[in-house]
Amino acid sequence: MIVVGSGAIHLRDELAALGGEIGGIEIRKFPDGEKYVRVLGDAGEVTVVSSTFFPQDEHIIELLLIGDALREKGAEKLRAVVPYFGYSRQDRVSKEGEPVSVRAVMRALGLYYDELYVFDLHNPETLRFFPGKGVNLFPARAIAEYFSEKLGDGVVLAPDKGARGRAGAVAEKLGLAYSHFEKKRISPTEVEMKPVDVDVGGRNVLIVDDIISTGGTMVKAANLLREMGAKKVFVAATHGVFAEGAIERVSKAVDELAVTNTIPTPVSRISIVPEIVRL
Amino acid sequence: MIVVGSGAIHLRDELAALGGEIGGIEIRKFPDGEKYVRVLGDAGEVTVVSSTFFPQDEHIIELLLIGDALREKGAEKLRAVVPYFGYSRQDRVSKEGEPVSVRAVMRALGLYYDELYVFDLHNPETLRFFPGKGVNLFPARAIAEYFSEKLGDGVVLAPDKGARGRAGAVAEKLGLAYSHFEKKRISPTEVEMKPVDVDVGGRNVLIVDDIISTGGTMVKAANLLREMGAKKVFVAATHGVFAEGAIERVSKAVDELAVTNTIPTPVSRISIVPEIVRL
Image (cartoon, rainbow over all chains, first blue to last red; front, side, top):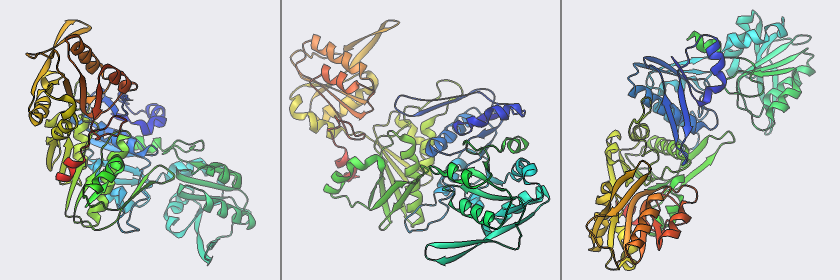
């Protein structure tokens, strides 16, 4: 049985259409703001799906309440699928006195869930904070399928060296070449970007990243590729955590911007639902 | 050291004035809504104070983040003081499929805190869900001192039999008599209330409860006491979880309504800070 939380309502119809058995759930708020949940139906092995985008804290507490309700009902095995995992970028102490916020959330979910599936976690190593089995998925197939025709015999690029694996996974599904941008600081405020060992002249290019926030890097990369003679420039990312105006800014600079639906946005055109149903 | 969370900012100045050593803390939100905390100063034995009223979920997650930051800093002993404990009224499964929400929150806090102090918990038995040492405090002294002069040789009443202990504790501090209202259902929609074994004629009366929400019971009790010839009618409660318009409704029906400052409200005139400092 699949239980759909507030952070995955946008995935429910497709989950059902692809054969997922959707369990009933009642979710509302008391007048004082406390959340009320009630899980209907049998509880044997249950998969609870909910991303923890804004309002993150509400979605996280709701996952605990759903977990508590299911355990109370006698559920034997609980699996949480959290496509976008809030607080994942607070994965280290950069100033003394900070928490490793992602650890706190992973530990809390571990009170109720045996397994945790996430998509393209900012720092996959932080899954070690989850006490049960933790799995990080990258929707390479979904991204590749979406851009396959548009890209033709183009090339896949990562915005930096650290993101090469992601570009490689998509390129592999498409049977295309891939590379990455090299970044070099040329002044205190300026960074020079350059695609490494690849000729983009006359070719379509797909840049793949994990999160797009302000979109600054993407706009810069796209402009550079145009200057270098690229044909069409596409941008894909797993999570569209867009800052104000970012969608417009990136869309204007590229031929198409598309992200997956781990978070619902106007450009969440790539679905991760098939990957969830396959689990 | 005392660390003051978002749910206790209204208590900070008084905590400092009464001698609490207040530790520095930085709390803000990232543009995407995620909370950022940073704890300054030494972390040896730390008391974190924060009520979890609205927005409850944010206050709860913040307590986890503060706990994580303090543990990361090497804190040896962490004590949480949560004067008003959100979700405390969801203390049992009344319809199949519901969670015991208070349990989920207690367990999550147990990941980081060794001790938990709460005030007048809706169901004190739910403290057993907290894995460490749990203590339920009732601010009888604070309530008694606040109403001592006004009440004179009056009487203290509980709104129902279950709340007798609370009235008794306040009455004892004042050296006064106490009793409770008996409730009798006289029709499907009507409940008759009657103070048991006590003559309120010509006397001041203080009604003491744990939470005032709509205030319906208090208004009814106050009207009844007037009919019975009571002089002044005062109402006190630990937690002012007021529904819209409740403060005005109750205030109009009584001579004075005062609650403690576990939650900041316009009538939170009774301070629990001395009780926190004494811990």
